[in-house]
Length: 158
Image (cartoon, rainbow, N blue to C red; front, side):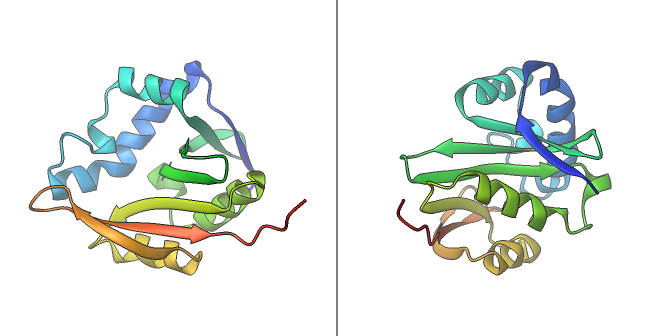
């Protein structure tokens, strides 16, 4: 499968938001987090994030398959705010390829951070396998606790 990552343009906002909602629908039902769930996000806020973060569209064999949203904390610290794939592209080992490609693209980043639901063993295993380490946790509501993760990269000085 040919994977391409490119900056998101506004024409992609609606199809990407639909994929995001589809990808996070089960979490919305489970956690009932209508304030911050990606499945409850409005098109206006999605467009705001495209304009005010580093938002990328993921293409698989030329088709829009998902997205990545990064937030620059400092010049050397970035946050993986969100990564999502259409359910039809999930469970094919693409997450590892996408995350590797993304990390290689940002050569100056020394620290990555993200969060994921505490009870989502699959996500936690994925990030831990990728070198992320638990750095904290916080409760969103009575159903949802998020684990904070960080990963320090081994960048060589120029």
